[in-house]
Length: 245
Length: 309
Image (cartoon, rainbow over all chains, first blue to last red; front, side):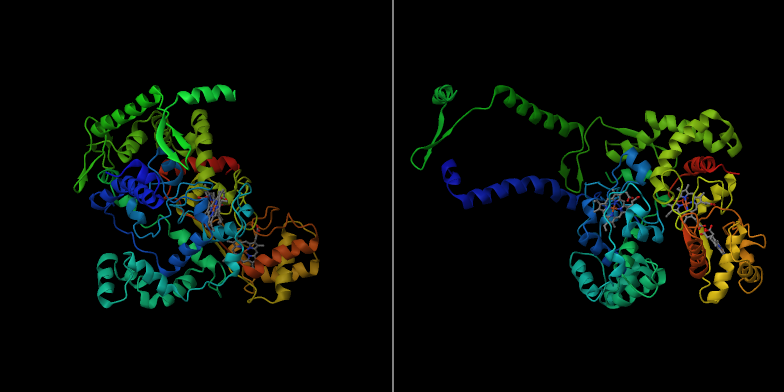
């Protein structure tokens, strides 16, 4: 039996024992979620981000948008009426790290995709007060001026692949993605064609309204426009989701 | 004070440790009320484990007893499940006091025609308060809280000038399916001189003072194949509802910031810029995001905002 006094007079031992006690609390809550069948809903449509959306997500994190915006609609009536269907665990299963958050200085963004036009997002990000006079969101003018650096996009995808996001490099992985997501999506998840796919999506959609350039604005708006749009809720009975709780 | 403290401290036991020779630690027991409150929370936890979902077991978990929630699923079937926030939400959306009150009105709105809603004072009072919230969450970021819009970007809904028509049916169509306002850029197709001329012509249509000779040349561009403006704006320049093309004969402007221009040159430049660069504006479709009754309410609300047709 370790004596009270020997713990209190031995800082190293005290730290280790404190960490053990605290982690028990965390482990008891977290570990079972990996084993419980109903943690992540089985739904169609959720896919990893395309290379351009992924760069947009990185910029979202770099700019600290998460400090004011959550991406988690909770199952309450007022949130449903304002933001739409509550978020599913499945919808962030490829997010590393997830952007749930709890700080809402601005509105939740989990379903902002498709809500506004690209032009609105560009005007709003350049100067939020140009469209929402009472807004307190900061201006992000450099997004439109800075060319997107995508030279390391393949590395970024490889890093996520290590955490379990199914980006593909081998034929076998590609075939698996075709089976799971269909050929069109599988092409976008191919690391070897990441740069071309990124350029193509940016030029085809011209999110920032500057046809000749691919800027950080293109990437960020592409990301915002896909948020919360992957699951088609009209295909599911609401009762189905209660089975996962 | 300090004397008194020293006295009471003398009565308290120490933990028996001594550091640096004389540093001691008092052993003050917790007050009884605190201790009992603590035991109470432990007891509460045990009761909670029994009645609510709590302990993981293998690939599932204990769901608790006597906590059934019954709600109606999307197919209209009754479903009963153990206590969980998702089922509770559905139940609240169906049976909650607020929800039922709203539902009562929404059902009536669903069945009523536009004329009926507009003529019913009670439904209109509901519409104004309910639709205001929906408008604030979804439409105000573009059209502004009062619907007055941002010139050049998002049209004013609070005037009685409509690009796509101001009848309830037109507005309903606009909100449900969205709109794409498109005018080609003429910067390449027309010469600088032609653009200047046609800008003067456009300004003359709404009674602005312009160089008469230039406007006459501009009229040729506007009304013939040279510019082909009449094709979308009509020969009378009053605009076509099917194209969402602006009426150029009134003093209401949606893209060119003519009202904000102080001088004749600035007015000319504002109109010129639209013709040179063209317009591409998108109003999103709302049929996936809002339910039919909400769209109907918004239609009536917007119609009333703008003194619709």
